[in-house]
Length: 294
Length: 284
Image (cartoon, rainbow over all chains, first blue to last red; front, top):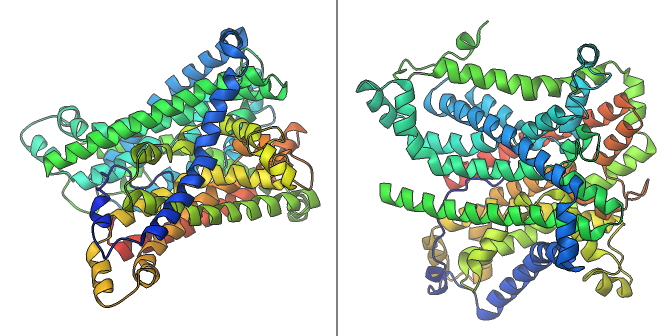
């Protein structure tokens, strides 16, 4: 349910501005431009700038001290581990789901696509709650897990599960429309010529979908790093053990340690900027690839 | 009944391998991680009698949270529909410096962790913040009031309207506007009678997506909301509050209300997208 139909090029706006039928009178144009840019600055640019100014308000020394704090480092480590498990899981799932949905005809296909998108319409808090109901102390498997001394809720596995849930559809939803649009002629040709299934996938399908795949992975990764609500429910907030970066930001903020909170937040904001940069780069690359094939 | 017989391919053109494997894996993974855990919410709620359920989900504090969550989300989606349409229009129709950068930054709310957005907005709109210090002397308190909730929900909803309207606007044939102009239509008439009807399904889809996201939003809201009972508590926070009191049944009952609502909205969004595809001839 995130950005719809994404990989498309941007047309040049001058063709509208040079056409009397498609341009507005100057004052209308400047009013629309002024209002929309003010809206952009107030709601998007200003919060971004605020993160970095607040982080550096007390100088670089405080900033670096906050980041090299032991609890901050363990939060960074846990976040990296979580993303390193959740993203590959959803990547394999995304490819598998896109393969069966885009390359074959079967009943219930549309319904299956809707089910895959389901996690996007569930509140993050509910996403955390469902695993508490399954694996928490009073949950379905709570007794069995306790008897076997396995901890899922208020431990790392719960955090990974919640993260997998909230990032579930990212790769699949990028690949399904892309692979549907590409059809299956190339794969069928390869198969008929004697290539095995895996050979067909690695040498024919993968090169065609690589940009869409990367696009999904990057969005999935950004969300895995930044998830707050779902992880907050299952984490238990144990400092140095089950705190991810966003949760650590919350703890520092609630202790009125604003400089440190914004320091950790600035790392996440940097990652967001890198994500957006890569995203634009991939859109440009994918635009070139589709131009070449035309 | 096995998955292969249930989802039997309808056409007999299965040259490609891997159908059974990929479908089987997809169904197992989906069931284990999404469907079975989600069903836990409904099964847990079913252990509650109807009257108990009703008492939990209509208690005054919870009802106050619905009013805030749904009201602020509707308003935020409305604000995003108006300004998102303008921003999409500016990005497609006008040339101005920094356009590529602005276009890329529109997706910031998707990429920026919600907790980061939450503390940044709070710092901006608090009494001593850049925006708050301008607004408070005018008698407008934003942070730690329902207005703060609205600001956070506008932030997270920005990309939805822009990104659903933008591609439709880009695909719009200029011939339509030229025809309207040659027939003597004013620019405003062309916009309301020709362009807007084509954009409408996409605009409504964007509105519904922003609304759906806003209702469930947690991270960016709780810092700026102040979380005062009966005044600035959102519904997801009520679930957290119940969980912290170890009232799992209560938390699950409220979660059921939210889930039923989300599923209904998902249905509406699917219908809107089908309508949009039909009107513009675009797939998706």
